[in-house]
Image (tube, rainbow, N blue to C red):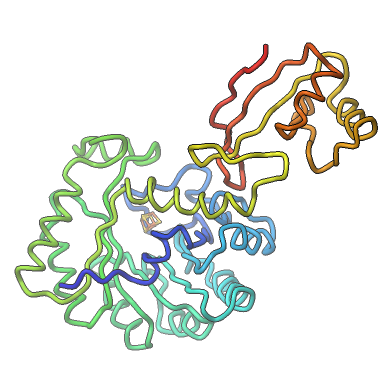
Length: 344
Ligand code: SF4
């Protein structure tokens, strides 16, 4: 067995992969499906955390993270094959042929024709989460010249099925097997509990990691050459997401914001007592010549977000203002992490 990891995973670990969620529709209905309720069963498109309304949203998010590749996922992207093909072509056109695209599918609709069309559109790598009855789709993808492998969760108690899959993948010359740690999410927690699975740490299913490690050890002892890669939930959350946000931060920081020590976006929010935020902003621009890009009125209209070096000036016009330090994730949706009063 080799430790080589698929190109798609390499870029993902660097935070250089845009996650393009093509649809929440999927006909497999796995009991452990981790999809959130805003996505599962809904025909929606997301680029990372951004709900996509038009193709430009996808390209802008790719630019924001300096994407070197895209991971297309769902749901099952092949339920919306034409949409998926269109996105592959657009991504290759815009970011260039070298932009690496991998796709995850359960394989239910991975007909030879669909695989061929994906290949012709420019897909580089396909990861099939197949059952025993449709795993020949992996062989079909290989025959068509795609980099092809399997991506499955490590389910405690299903070691023999994993070993069987490994032998199959080896026999058809597949390129890799990715084993994911099984995770609890609000959506699958009831189903997992009903089947007797327990929580370990913050989200992992107890025994999932051990299952993956035992199977990998077995593959080594059997001299299996197939590259097998284990992806833990902490790798996904702590490393991939963090790396992506670090890449994003430098591109999306606004002139009046700052980068905090913990890699978040920090800004000063002034709630004026004498003027409306808009009036205070105008005063700062007209009376002191502070450039417009050094402040903005907050989304709720209640405060003025201003660069640190102009805070004192703002307080001269409105001395009893309240001031907060706000920290946000540098995602497209800018989730607020903390709002600390500095002057109240
Ligand atoms: S195949 Fe994937 S997306 Fe579909 S139900 Fe199973 S885990 Fe969810």
